[in-house]
Image (cartoon, rainbow, N blue to C red; front, top):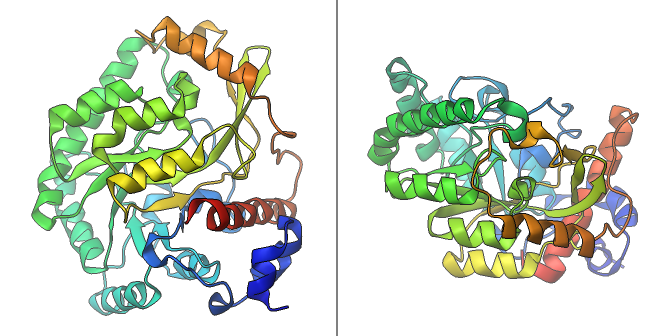
Length: 369
């Protein structure tokens, strides 16, 4: 049996993991090219030798207005090549290359691999940052970028102590994006802003409507707004007019004393209707990039029974809260939620790899990705 045949038939991610980690790219073909599922770096944290961040998210807020974190990592092709070796259709990366020769060679690779690439470039916090932002946007465009990704908030219920604090932060973010928009328009490169547990869907949709720019939209995360008591299809439909790209994941929930636990789980093991969500997005745009973000970590605590959870929130309809509580009751986890506490880096790598490869296999067989 060839490796390709084994990949199609074997049922255990644990069995295919050693095979796929060693296989060459041509032995794990990507049947969908750039339309196939790509990879987000937050799905490969242990592989990249990194650790889970503190409050605010696993990625440390990739593209905050202030420069820092993943978005300022020097350009390397390692992660792009690794995604290609797994047969993925694209990759989300940090900064683009700035050297003209490197830009040309990387663009040639993007085209030769038939993959999409999305960059994370920190937004200009002040007018003084516009020149560098312009230079980096031009480089991303020249390197063949499909677009840009930005996660501009942490977890709202952890980040803010008052509603006014949240509103002030939201105003600053809107001003930053408005400052960046003319540069995006100049280079005709689109920025997709993730629903990163910071805004309710109606708040982000209202902002996008006010901004009314064809170069600023939404990077739709399939599961993040569950933490804000939103059913995922509601979030998708609310944001759909502005969605440019997305992070695909499945989610599981489990009650705990202060609320519920929320975890990314291998595709098919959670409660999301992945098929319906993918079809909805690909009907909007058949080439929409959807990048795997199966974050391997301990469950997130969503403390909805505490006062702290609610201080930065307002106007969540009671019916929406009731629907989420019903969802939690009707969809218990199919198995123990993933945990990484106490694992060394190598064991976390193995666990992460098994989860990711299970997702890739499921996406090939069930989602046409």
